[in-house]
Figure 1 (tube, rainbow, N blue to C red):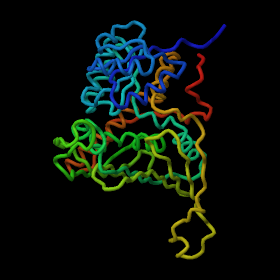
Figure 2 (cartoon, rainbow, N blue to C red; figure 1 turned 45 degrees about the horizontal axis):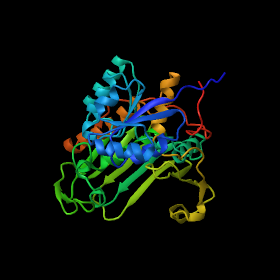
Figure 3 (cartoon, rainbow, N blue to C red; figure 1 turned 180 degrees about the vertical axis):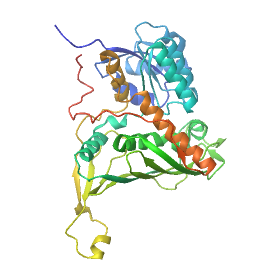
Amino acid sequence: MSNTFEPVGIAVVGCGNISDQYLRNLVRFPDVNVIACADIDLSRASAQAAKYGVPHSADLATVLEMPNVDLIVNLTIPAVHASVALQAIRAGKHVYGEKPFALSLEEAETIIAAAAEHKVQLGNAPDTFLGAGLQTARRVIEAGQIGTPISARATFGYPGPDAWHPNPEFLFQKGGGPLLDMGPYYLTALVQLFGPVKTVSGFGRRAQNKRTIGSGPRAGETFDVTVDTQISALLEFASGPIANTRFSFDEPIATRELELHGTGGVIRLPDPNAFDGSVFICKKDVNKTSPQEWLDAPTDADWTEFPAKGSAEGRGMGALDLARAVRTGGTPRVGADLALHVLDIMESIIRSADSRQTVSLATTCKLAGPLPATWNPLQKSTQ
């Protein structure tokens, strides 16, 4: 007799740009069954369902009535993340959402309370930390390869999504901006490696009050910018390290950096918005004898590569993690406490930037250990 569990029925709600990345993976994972695609634009839902062989397309209300849909994958724009999640929860569905979890801690706590009342589970993006790259980094750090972690530097910057996104306005309004759009990847990775954040100090500005759409049928249209597009913040972690972070839609060239410093070495991590990528470590050289030697920057030869070990299937791994937890009664790695804490970090950075004062966080989170390198989304799980 087989001890595998039945696939979890999924409906993908929100069939915009990001849905392709989810659907191409979810339809391949044996532990889930994509039953329906839903969107406020029914033609878009129908097109995505046809493209990926999903049997049904409908509006949100219809998929919430489908008894074989157990879990909603909420890929709507940030402004309606909470509304869609609450509707799904009240219909008795588990919910995995795109980032950010909600637009405020108050919204997020309402979602968590509703989930507890209706006895459903929650999960939230980003799930990139489940990928081979960041999991390899975590295993390397926990093995003591850089000694005791003491600091980090995290940077994301480029000219902004208005140059390429056909409908970029939501990325420059409440719920968007570089902090809420790209910050979750870097902040989630840092929390996974250092643990929860204790306090933050933030600064913000915007270079332009209006932006111009650069591609697609609406190219040349202008729109208002209502959030800061340059954010810098210092994060103090409860375990001791301090991270220096910067997120920008104003920089003329692309910058991507995630580097951790320890008492015994430095580790360079792969892009936290990706699921793969090698880890590089430069160890402290105790044989240096002169001041100049200690001041010289390391050469390429000083860095040791640790190739990524694990799965790098891509977006949808977090929804799978939640689905497996639903079936087994376990706790998802992408759970609500992690998403709430990352949202708290970002909201606290914004409050600090507005008040010019250091802000203490109201939340914390518990983390599971590193994933084994053998964790495989394409292999059917057993109970």
